[in-house]
Length: 387
Length: 244
Image (cartoon, rainbow over all chains, first blue to last red; front, side):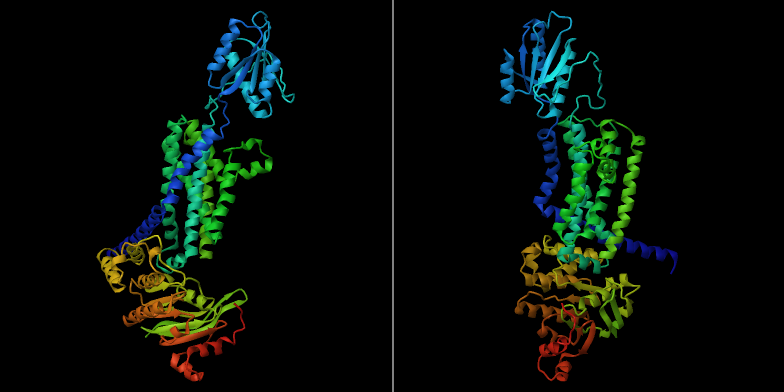
């Protein structure tokens, strides 16, 4: 046979396997489009998650009801109260006449902060303001008093004494006022943190869970056996399964970015291309995880369970999405290193919020690449043994 | 000419020998019944012949290709239908045909011709756009069989193809099998139903990983002095020591 004939045969073989592949990918799309309910859920999940994290479980201070006990009754204090009630963080609930009334408002849960201006507030050189916060939720109390201190300091040079209605929390004001500049997220918006987190979660959900469930479903139905007896290469079967979910997850990433940018005012400071590149890399990690799960699970239910317990929970708990990793016990901090989402979220924050270039996310990219290589080897090996 | 040649084929899992030195051959166009109780080793033997698992020892050639080295070539020349239903329920009838046609390298005009012919033979022309899930089980099975031989393989392996189907549909299904055999496709079928064994040219009966009997149904019945395959099967299967 001449070389050109050989080449021709090879071409023919390739186009044949390409046709195989195309008809198989088409089938996977049918599976997804025919199952409207699942598809709607998959497309709706990012929106729902963003709404939940953005509006329901927010840690931001907003419209906190406050009461004011103004014993000095001067123009200065009145102006200050106006400023406070005009801010988006606080709402003036009531001006009270005495301490007893303030205590009552606390007890009836009507206010979460009381501001006390002393009689000599306007006249004394050493004027101080007392802030009383409900410290049943200590984190919130700290945050509220910090916000209020900041607000009052911005609006006049007064010194402030902190105190709370709960004895656990009592900090005296100091003349040494630290000047804090918050970088990248000056308004301390929660969205800056959870948007990358939700992206990490969605990609795991779709790429790992849907892919593994899809493969296991074929095993359960017995169609996998038929496919393996066919001339179709096992690698094609897996790749064809992954493609639609990869596309779907990219649609979701775009949805999340659009909502984050236009509704939550989260900036996309860095390169969008880099962001998409990192997302695809992480999606590959997720796909490999899904493939690995599919080699271990025999039923769709167990595949789903493994994905939720072993893949999704760590994303929520150990990736820094909800709980800061720095505050965790050392063992968990160490454990968090093997959660791919942690590295993805760090990289996304760097690029999206801080606007850093590829140079600063190289370590994360390297780690994710190593994870892809390792998981791919492991799952391909297992896939062959099992099927 | 033989399309399946098996000599001392063995498969062990650790100390357990699932298939124990079996030897047989199947001729071109033959309808070969592969019988045995559950756990006798039928499925393991069949998986080796389909190229799904490598034998521990022994030799076998399927469609002229070696089961150790040429599994990819074997796969191109065989069809397969499992006891589990092998079509996709959420795909339409013609989409299933196109999918499997595509997997076996059919495309364009040839695929279209095949599709039309297949639908015509099965009398499913009106159901072309029906989702397979909404077809009755008997129709699904007939469709699954026709799809399994859409690429005109030399051999088709049928793993308990008629499980859970009523006798009338089973009869119709076997007519399809006969038609395929007439077209020269060798049929290798495992079954639990002894009346189906009677339809085969030759049957082998496996007990505990070994082939205990292999002959035409008539010859087997004669040698066991009985008039039905059921007695033959039970006489042999009773010797089994392996549980399920």
